[in-house]
Length: 270
Image (cartoon, rainbow, N blue to C red):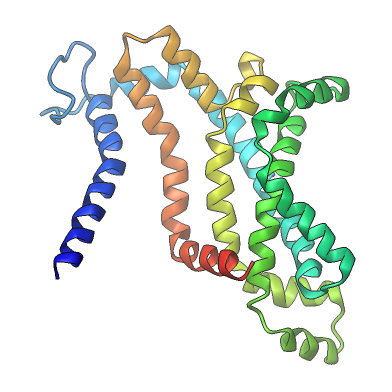
């Protein structure tokens, strides 16, 4: 009994640590600039000008457009390429496929920052600087290994007899995958969308180096420059941060029922 109580206390403490920053963010974003009351206390009024000022001053409308273009296209490509690559790697355990799968898994241990300098030179040579396709290519390349790992693990949970039954009915590999296998991948697809969607949406390092033009800034870079320019306007910064967090939060609410099941199956079976 005491062990359960101890675990409950630890769980509550950990949950509190995660909730606390959001609580302070909310209290700060709804306070006037000249409100010097404690950040722990919710204001007894509703002040929305911080959100308006943050939206206009940080040019968040353009930043949101850039984020949506980069994130949506990247996620679509990651899902399509990752699922297509994982299916044969999972179903056909040949020596070559095992080697290719090992290469994908090995790429997971490479930190993106260690390759930033050669990537920068490579993108300059390709003409990918300040181009949507350039940063999208980087996001797809760095997120594909984990995607293949998760999809391959989840596909292993689908009986191979299903493939054989569909093939006996006359369906080809293309129809088998897109009509039968792909719809069964909804849980792991939701997991991929949430994991990589949040990562790409909040990306700072690639956006900072490869999208340097002001009109191509993503939200994280826009907020960063806005924070440095308006450090005394912390309420505006908090409001901007809250706005940027809303889209991914909404997407997670819609996909959360698939998230745990997909992540567990992909990780355990991979």
